[in-house]
Length: 96
Image (cartoon, rainbow, N blue to C red; front, top):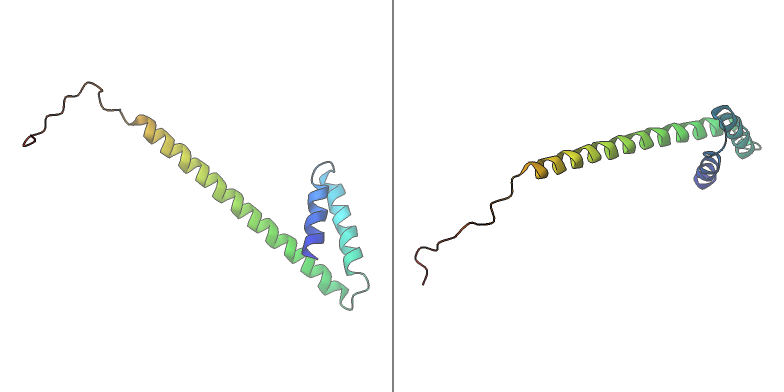
């Protein structure tokens, strides 16, 4: 059932308006839950699944954004490091 819901969501993401997507999801949920003994509980499970998925997606997006910002800061810090001069003479004390 998760695969069906995910597949339906992915297939609808591109070319429908938000209201069309919602109507399509409502129709799909009705088709999935129709004929089950506890129709209302089935619909609630689907809504809870979508809500949890949305929360997880939002958290993943926030983590990705934070990681990207951290990488940008690290890159800026690396660029701020002055390279050592290339004409340095190293003398080894105690070397033969």
